Image 1 (cartoon, protein in one colour):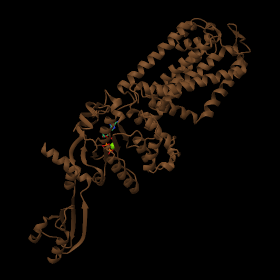
Image 2: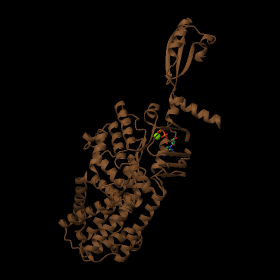
Image 3: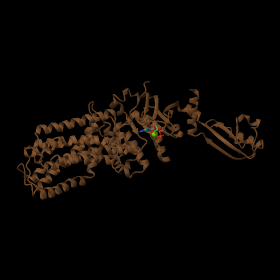
Image 4: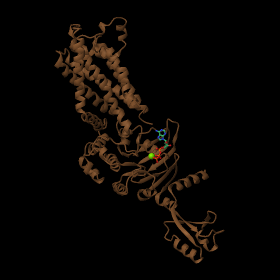
Length: 257
Length: 311
Ligand SMILES: Nc1ncnc2c1ncn2[C@@H]1O[C@H](COP(=O)(O)OP(=O)(O)OP(=O)(O)O)[C@@H](O)[C@H]1O
Ligand SMILES: [Mg+2]
């Protein structure tokens, strides 16, 4: 072990987590491909025939960033939360707790793996979408950066949920009751400019609006809010998650008796 | 010599308010084998879990090879291996992957010849590519031992390593402990079996209701624990023990139906043959003989009572 970082330990956790998903690789690939296709059939076909364009972008293309975000947020949370919840559930967490691994090294392994999966998932949805609608990415680097930032941030959030959860039901409570509604209401399938007041102003209190808007900007060079604001909100949420995780490990909350 | 492990004033009150451990002081010398004995719920697992960083102590400090277990936890934990009491192991992994994972988690690069040796020593090499859920309970315990040994720890904790294992595995375990001792590994184990402590340990600690009631060299303890008794069921009840039997210090029980003889099992002459001859000589008839060891529970009760009287 080098003096500073237990790189072997981080790598071990990362690989362990990746191996866990590889065991269900077909499920992991088929699910996003099928659901994305379904969305295009339903939204692109049925609704898109009524709404032709949003801000000059074809409706089918317009919903791609929102679709990716929807999966990214829920999958990052579920991957990372299961990753840490499962060892707690089976008791194998004893090994992690007794190992010479710091909190941030553990986070790097678990969250790194969950974020990797989300990024792959995002790219998979993007590729599937390209089969249905014309796609042009205006700012590819920004698009990748947003993809990575969002995956990491929501994997961190999922990690916290996994530590907090005391049962399998609780794992899905936050994604189902909070994140999915916020994503649908956050302009995944419409621009908030299309909303009447006061809903437009109320929507600005939904943090997911900033994520989707920023991501959409990287595709079409325009979003509901400025790209700087989008980045700021995402980075702020990420910082909040990191602070929370540091506090959890300092106190041993829900991890140690 | 400086102890390899030093526990000072470590106590634990769980969130439920249950006081599992009163302040404990304990020093373990390098290379020794220490057995911690105690009834269910005595606090053995709690103490081990605190030392290994799984449970947060309410008070006290722990030093491992001179490293504070909290402030310098990386150095302290790197030298510790733990085999937990529960069979907590990832069921979907293969044996080999799981053991490799443990080694890396403890900061060591892969070292396949060492891992192979560990698996061979534990008769797991043939099973290395089997998923852990396919193994029997005893095999799973071996996997946990292999995982704990994977990073070549200087201090090994075995929390009830022989609970629920068959005789063969128990013998294997004892052999393994002796081999590790020869390599200089310090071992702290918990057990409910007195013969296990007898077989393996240099020193024995007895813990009860969260308090260490005794720490002693094994040889000393064995003398104290080595008491056995013989119960003689008489055909005719007696009013008093005959004077001719005074040498054996017998006691009369069950309204004169039973004679109790307490003897030292490790002494060269137990006095049993001569006692039986004497009984025949005196024409005292008996229906049945029964010898028994004082059970571990008796011994704990004894120890605790003695302690309480002393206090
Ligand atoms: N997480 C917990 N919360 C509350 N009480 C606990 C917890 N874990 C253990 N205890 C209590 O602390 C006491 C000591 O438990 P511990 O597991 O250390 O005993 P032990 O000596 O290892 O027993 P055994 O021989 O059964 O393994 C018990 O009374 C137990 O019920
Ligand atoms: Mg125990």
